[in-house]
Image 1: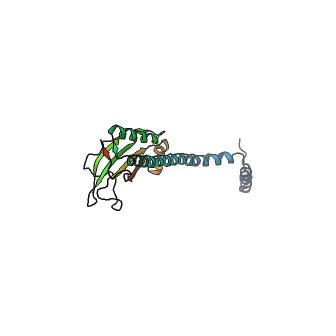
Image 2: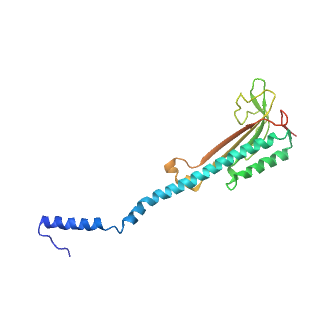
Image 3: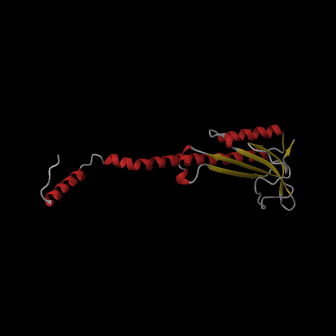
Length: 196
């Protein structure tokens, strides 16, 4: 049972003593600080892991596009089975990430006298290959286009969904990462690359 105080002065004195005791008692401060800071630490950790995976996939996508362009440029004549094997091999660069979302388009592009470009032949992985005379999968800058010289155009696209990107989408507005990497290369042996 609580003791009844006789005067306001006594009540104020009791309140001051109680507040003083609470202010001096530091036993729960660490726990309260931890409870306040822990959610922030979890979000920072999740964001770091998520961003690290996104950067790793970006680097791998650059490698895929560059490797394919470089490899195709090293021969002047390809068989369909050879080019399919090269594309499939380059696609393994994305591992350990899931390669089901990976799409690759390799096109040999003809450059006309007015520097417009059209596909001569193309092979793809994860999507339908472009047909002859279709538009180039990559915008070809006119300063590298040369009439009569074919170009190798590679486009690789990928969508990465991480556990944290979905979880943090209400905060970041991003539920997955989208990559669209391109590479343009001139043939090394001749001015053309033929598909047998």
